[in-house]
Length: 583
Image (tube, rainbow, N blue to C red; front, top):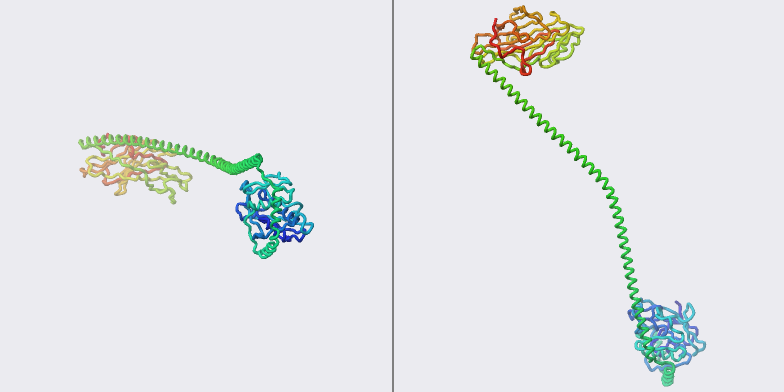
């Protein structure tokens, strides 16, 4: 900001004279005034709007005094050693000013004071702001807007004064009273202007020696005319009541501020709680989504568990049932096995009893039971051997008639289909062997049931039941189709009363003598439908073993080797016969 000169608010009347004397030659001079207000610290600069009550009055009084002094051309005595400061640090606070009205901000408040005089050495100085009209305001936050233009009220630290601005001389006394009561205090010297200020003060000292008495009288007159004290009790009470009302309003203001702060705190807390509520609602929604997502999964898991549990129960039940059935079956099998063992034991016991009885008579027979089956095919269907021991079933590729081994006991003869019916020889698996250390006659026996295939013709149908001497390979045979018996020496014996019918059962028995009868030879006999055919025939070569076999043509057979006599007994009684008569 460009200004002509900076002036200061001064602390006494001599300083006022010094400031006026420094710039009274020029009209319309612009001064820059820096007002030092009171704040939390004495060293803080206060902006214009933060000045306390009474500051504007003092400033106006100061400006009016400048004009008055200039008009009356009052000369100050220079007997006192007074310094003119460049700036005043601060103003003394009013005793009734609340600390809340004082600002703590450290800022310079600058405003313009326009000082002008119409005549040199006379006229009235007025203050105007550079940027606008009227007098510059040096006070902010005034607590009362009722101050009139004719009377301005301010206070010092010890009593109150009323300045009547209608009397120009009273302004000087007001300034002096404010100075005496420390309205302004503690200033900051400007070292740059010390020499200039000392020079002016020296000149003033010379002038003041002659005029001291005149100035004192004038001052006293002004004081007596223009000032009076408020000693009236009602006025004091009114002032006190105003102060109490002010304090009450201040306290209420504090309460309002506290309430506002509390309201703000509550509003902040409410906002935070509302945010928390929204957050909780979001969390609950998320949890609901998770629960809704989990519920189907749990339902599926529960359903799966139920199914698995049901399946386990069913499997366990089946397992228990199977185990129970198996246990019952095993129990039944054991019972059946025991029954069979008992029957067999009874049977063996009976056999022993019979054997003992025969041994006593020395003519008893002991049936020797041996497990046996058909096993070997001794013929061929054709040169290709389509059917053989290793391949016992099938058809001849040339259509010749041949047998099939159906099982261990059954032989099926297949009649020729375009070929010829060939005779077939079939051997058993086991041989009849002489028992060792036997004191009874030992009987080996088997039976064969015949079934004629095709039309019955004695020449076309062939059935021979035979024993082969394993030592000489000679055989003993019964020719059922013609009723002949042939021995090992190829001698034939005719059975005169013999006849062969479909379904007849023929049997062959071999008897070995006891071990102690070394001179006796084994013998053979045949049966038909359970009856012996003729007498027994002695085997000349006394072999130690014989093997059963059959010759077949257009005849199927079913053998009974005595494997299970209880279920399938012989037609011939092998236990109740004595020694068969020989030829």
